Length: 106
Image (cartoon, rainbow, N blue to C red):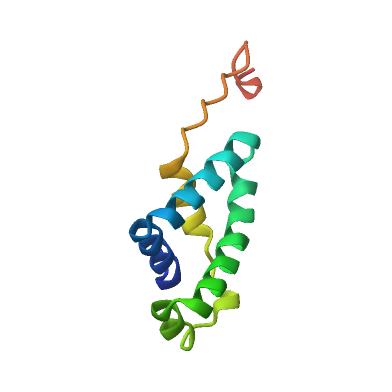
């Protein structure tokens, strides 16, 4: 999976800052356990990660330096949200096929 520079910066930051990483890992695991729709959850996490990136850009020098050159409001965090869901949550079991097979086979 390819991450844009902002997503990579957040990912690296979460990997290097144990408390921040632990907070997000728990947040994502809890949210994933409460919703069957991980696609919709990734959309919500995209928004939350963008807000987090903006907040970090105000207080962390490494983020601030980059924020001056990037448009934070338009930067997607969707790939990062999907990656974090993939690596930090247990896979959901696949839905069992309906008895009788696919109706288009008839």
